[in-house]
Amino acid sequence: MMNKHFLKLTLAAICTALTAGVSAQQPVTITFGHVLQENHPYHAMALRFAEELKQSAPEIDVRIYPAGQLGDEKALIEGLQTGSVDVATVTSAVTANFVPQFKAFSLPFLFRDTDHLFAVMDSDVGDELAQQMQTKGLVKLGYGYGGARDLYTQVPVQSLADLKGVKVRTMQNPAIVATWNKLGAVPTPISWNDVYVSLQQKLVQGGEGTGVSYKSMNFNQVAPHYTRINYILSWHNLMMSKSKFDQLTPAQQKAVLEAGEIAAQYERALFLEQETALFDELQKMGVKVYTPSDAPMWSEKAAEVIAAEADNVGGKAWIERIQAVK
Image 1 (tube, rainbow, N blue to C red):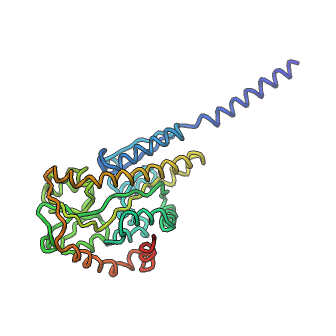
Image 2: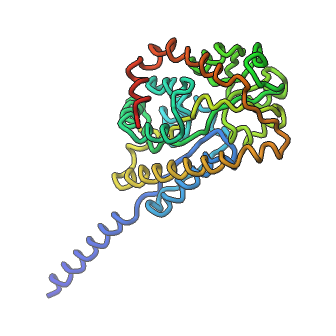
Image 3: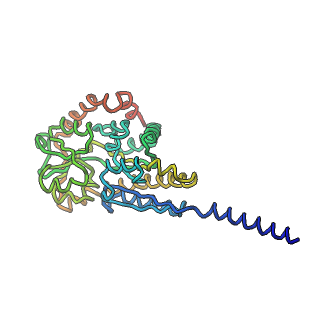
């Protein structure tokens, strides 16, 4: 009798221990780095990612480091590859230095509009890029929107003639540099974290980027003229270190992937909403907003870059495949 009672107690204890082992996951910390300020959609995306995981995998603690605290975008990708950074969101232009298939997205006027951009993200093109990222130690969690890239300057630029010889800060991307050369500017690659100081010290007279980032970084204080050209619709990659991802349980991996997709979709909608209201806000802040009087000439000159750069960005067939997505 005693033996049976002891056996029951022993079995109950084992079941309790096994149940506890399944339900009580070990705590996991995820570091999430990005280069923008806390009022930018990047940060809202990071917060949404953390909120989703809090619900689906409460043992995962997401610690967010905005404003370049973990380094510039190049350093963030290197951190993902070495495991010193767990999650980051980075422009496709900088990602292209590690995953060459992204180079095409820096071509001028490649996407017809944001609907086309999002369709490409969610197509087999996006799936193929996710596979290529994995070979470089990067796991795609989501594709986000970075806005339409324009020109901001310290002097008015209302035509190509006004742009000639102006030093314009660009990303370190060959297609983007080639575009600004073709437009008559002097492209000057500078790290994102150094743009404000470079404008302040007049090392450059302008820069190219999105209006949301322009406002977020207070560039209006040092470059109060904004020329709308919409030459690139910016694609951003929400990525995780593959080494960190592989350390997670299957359930945690599923939760992270789902949280990433929800956060990226949220960021797209938020960015579009902010972009719609942006230019009225900028003008109220004293920014002079222009549309070039010779806008067709900008796209004509920039189109030459597509032909010249095709072999360097994946080939003509890759470009046509992207353009053909409906």
